[in-house]
Length: 379
Image 1 (cartoon, rainbow, N blue to C red):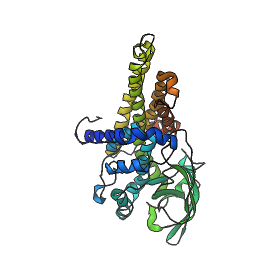
Image 2: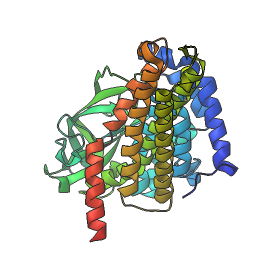
Image 3: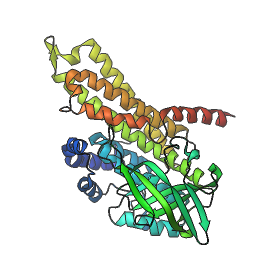
Image 4: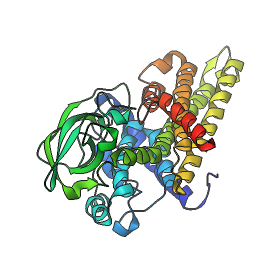
């Protein structure tokens, strides 16, 4: 495994870092306070060519690899994880179509994302089905050439702004009946419920999505009947490296701010960076950030090579998320009382970091996946 420092990957990193510096950092605190959806910022990110990188070249997209997506997400999330999350949500929602959609479906559903800024939402999570995706209760029934969907999705990123939803519903109430559907915005019966008020990532749009007698033509089904659970798991395996990259961006930013502050802050007649306790903290933070980096990009390269095992993507997601929470917490401590105040950016990093230990499968579930995969693959 290698993290490239030259060539196209590094050019992409420089572009993403410049966009983060110029378009995201100056407005991150304001969007965090207002909780407004940052559409103007996302329009500029799209204009820079950083949206929907996985859409194939044959239908007008960039056709870039999971490594490229991780590079972009690391840089943008370092600027503001809430703003950057809109890109992850698009990737998550479009991946089922890339995995299991026909060429006609990919052309029809993905080309608009290559041509203009659009948003997509991944409709899997429900009130009683979070990390346990197999427990979802949204039902679907077949009526002639149509499917009729009824249910309620919860905690859906981009839920209130999406132009396209990938919805998972079960035909018979079992995991074996779960099927995936592409549902365009404006479909009768599809509506947006309440918008969530969150601890962190406040610039992201998170809502309920309500489905009442939503009729989807047969050509809106992604994959075969009963393949939805497998499609969802493959999607999450691919996306968890990107989630890890965003957490890495948070951790890296927190470390950078802590180092800078420790150099400048004077106590006991010298910079606190020279105090042994602070040195120990910074050293531990730096080691964890670099370990997370290696795991994230190893997972991304394995996914790019076609690996379907969830082992490394689960490791990357869990370790990077834990690292983000640890490093942001230590940064707050190094800043002392100032770290607890909204006038300084580390408290936002601390709040933003927490969700990465929770969504796309809690870190406890990731450890379970890691252990079970090891036992199965060794067997």
